[in-house]
Length: 497
Image 1 (tube, rainbow, N blue to C red):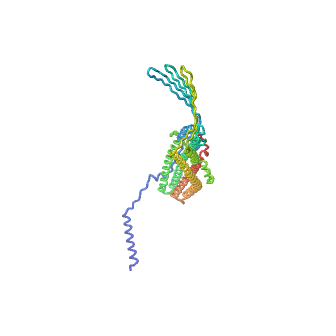
Image 2: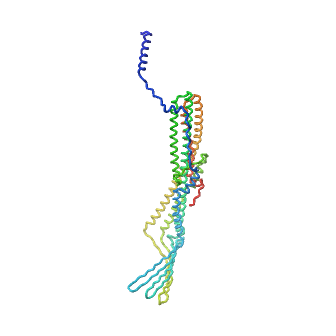
Image 3: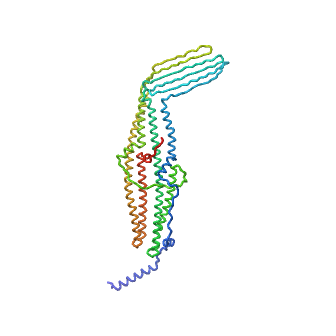
């Protein structure tokens, strides 16, 4: 067994050899970064806030300009001109139709030259019972070298269907279908305007969101610069190492990049809104809207019936079903035999040079009929009308299910976002309070810059979440308004359709 003295001497030798090896090995030490340290150790001026210049535009102003200038709305009103005229043509079905026909001809046969003049005014009238009345007054004159001849006669005809084509309901069906089509066109116009208003609202809020994000980014820069100046004071007093402020300065530069991105988003949102409003893209505008929010009633027992009574697609489908029902009526009538009473007459006279007037009297009447034996085309019309009608009813059920689904989803979204809004406000307030406390602790030497930066990140996230929750809640209300079909009522828009 070795003595304690020998063990101690061996340990001393090993330790001496270790220290000698360490002395020979040079450990590299990174040099300081003087580019950052002097900046952190000196007070710096605060960055100036961005001042947005341009005409302030509220949401109501944007909607007003959109209703007046938007290209989609103007295009819809141009289409309405043709649609109104289509209805006018359909309603003109039972009005008298006047016409004048005529011919003037001159011919030469051998040595004989003659001139013929024909003029025949007339009127045609179709009644709601299906009867067709025609009246014409035929006048013709022939002038030859040897004399002249004049013929004048009134021609009258009347035909009244008894089965096919007879009855007020059948003959009024095309007019009623045209009137229903006009109501559908009005609903489509309302839908176009409502969708355009919704697009303008979303675009306006995108611009507002970008503006608010710029404010938050600049607030973050301001707080970072304030922390840098506070760090500079601590460095000067010897209570903080200069290199500890480098990361804080890096965070400030990162927030400056965020400011630049926010300015770019403002420009993109501004151009998008100006394009919807059909304004000069060089116009400077600033979105203005209060973010005061209130809770709304999302009771489904009230919202779903309201949507079914206001939605343009659902109400329009009801009109389509009625049109198809009238189509079945017409198709059933086409299956009947064609039996009609008719009467016609021609009364007048004929005058020739050197002779007396010769009377014209030709009157006839009777029953006309056509009995088809194996014509499947008319039965095909009935089959097509019936399948179209049943298909439109199924489509109505599909639209109803879609409306109810949309309302349920939107109502749930509104309720959820309202809860998120309350949580986001509380989170933002607590994050701001935590930073204030931590800064007091930093000045007292009981905290670190790293801890303050971490809390600053939490505050930025909380501010962004609160802003997103506010804009998201407003947009959710707008979507619910669109899905209820009450956008025009909400903004008190009365269209001249």
